[in-house]
Length: 203
Image 1: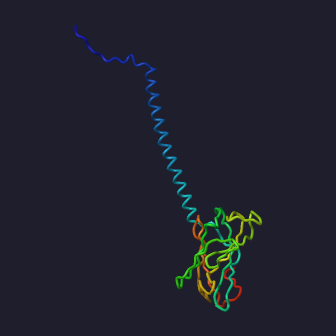
Image 2 (image 1 turned 180 degrees about the vertical axis):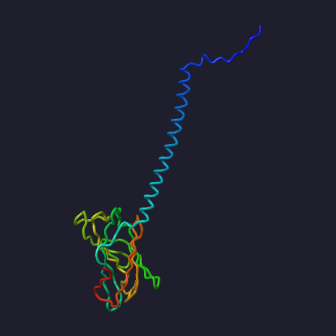
Image 3 (image 1 turned 135 degrees about the vertical axis):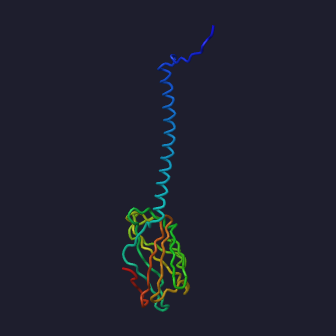
């Protein structure tokens, strides 16, 4: 007697087919979830990078009103400059404790770097002073410039005892406000032809 091996698939029932199909669907679903998760993560990181770049590239502040300077007539140079700032539309709060103001005279390369000091012990050779025009905290303002607040900043040009910058008539100079977040805000100014006690540099 000769035995023949015949391929017979009668035993492959519908239940087994369903199990195989479910296994394929499950594997495909898990694979798709992993791919989608990776895609969402990459998109989120890309959005964060864009938002961070925008914050760093745009300024958080803007000028309000005129820029006024006080002059030393005998020395024939500007002693300090006063201007008012507020947050730009959509700008983040600015920590003045971490904000640095630099005054540069391009013609001779001289500059002074000033830091925030709102105490009575004010060093006019290295500090700038803030007078709050309006603060949300009333008579006890904090060191943050927030929405709707206005801060009047007096920048001393290091003229104590005749030292510091020598900004005389018709001299060009730049004041740069460098907040901890956001782009530096440059203010380009020019001294008037004659130094007076009070001068309006920009209206």
